[in-house]
Image 1 (spheres, rainbow, N blue to C red):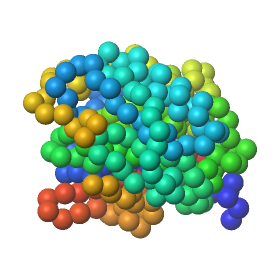
Image 2: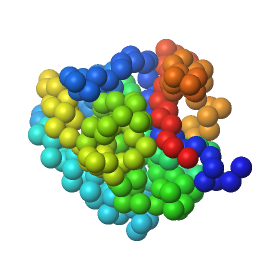
Image 3: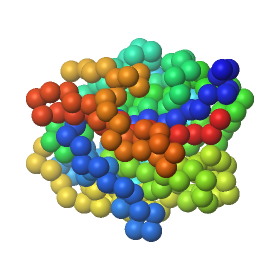
Image 4: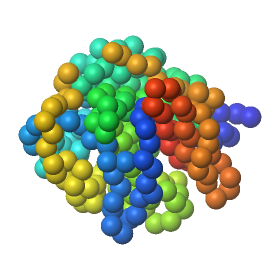
Length: 256
């Protein structure tokens, strides 16, 4: 089967004890288990490590600017410090990487590590094996996936997981047509409202800008499928990491 004939998917994973919630577009209660960065004041600044090539610079800048509209935090793009191929996490920030990760089925991966319910580090990977193909090498696909995967590292889940219904006008919405209308290339009002809820309370300690950890790229490393799409494909996977920890992987199927 040729690469363009294979399905691609978005992946978001968390190394944590999972609390899994389905998002509701009507109420936009799409917190990802209540996970959030620890901080002692709002607004705070979260660093995004730039490990991307020039082809992604505009998309990273757009995602950073769009998410910084939030009233509870700003994002700041800083020089990346990791090898994009393995894109190891760094405490206190989100590393954003792109590389040819292979025709393994996914367009993007987001992963967060937790201490209790506090996010301590995060990673976003953008898979050039697919984005170098004409199908996905568009402004809309690039902006949606970059925006969505970075959004997961703040503690947001999806607003909707139906690819074929009308777009909600947010990058946190599954779709097979990110250009819409409406376009799913940036956050919407519900995303900012949910962030305000997630970060309403303050913490006694901070986990922002404070051991590296590698990501699981291969589906064989995601663990057991526990939730499925209507056609029987695995959508949520859980892997036991020991010592009371688990890794949760969310998968969204994209069109051929």
